[in-house]
Length: 443
Image (cartoon, rainbow, N blue to C red; front, side, top):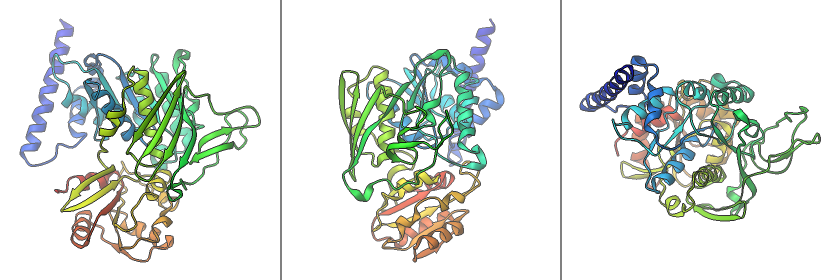
């Protein structure tokens, strides 16, 4: 009887979620990516605990500083192309309310999904695991990001490990090239799945990674790690004189990075795979590798057609039309990720950089000084800076050697200006909440 009462209560919550969505849409507003989830958790804090019953096979979480949205998006698409049903928070709302929002609007009574692929904010993973355990956890990387929210990297790593410790059945899928990520330990000595690159070749030297190289200390002796190969930021083949070194990979890959695509060759035991992806840059090579490795672990190997058909979403190298102009939108939020994105910017395009400092962006924008905005100094056209920290961004560009800058703090006004004046393609580089504002602008 008690079970039936809980089940009815859960179904009522699903009805409430859809009624809220209808009411918001009738007012001509977007229902957002978190509001309905906030309501669900307010009414029933244990809401997410009930959702596990609607996932037949595996639930997969994806966390890390960069690449969560892309990795989760690629993996979800790979599974859907195998004719599997997937719950996925595709809009990138990765805090507890965002995940609850996705569940509330995805689940129907008496319908079960094959998989759930859930992107989770690093700091909120431990809260997610209070209510919903996952079978797999992919950790992409850990870079310095939003120090006001996360603190230093060891603080973020500690939070992730605390989350892992709550989930006794989880199998970790770890980036072996990251000397922080590789140290996560699963409960019950479940062996992690390690992936990484043996070598990365840049087929065009102009796109070779120039991201800041971080200094990292050995976890055993505290001395500075050495590298035989370094691909970008702290990722590569690291070692220490005390004997500490990169983990042996279960999935070893080689990548050839072209301007418009990448070729990734993967070795796993006695099997060899080759994949082509149109997601550009070394950072996306890592994202695709993480997603493909997890799909193979789940038993799927015929993945190439799915990779071809994958389209970037919500500001992660997303191309859309805004008022007649082709616009490439690429999220920036920390120095390592921003520097990689800046290498790919078309300097012949009209460029707009939108910087906000809301909670989801991080209040501290000092990271602008660590990103390689010098790559924009040869831009052929004026660069517009916008958002709450438009003047901070303009100052950073001035010191980077950019001469033609226009500051328009209001994002909608900035969009109106750039689409009115642009003669060709547009490049937009926003932080997260600026991206949300841009996404509401009609084509």
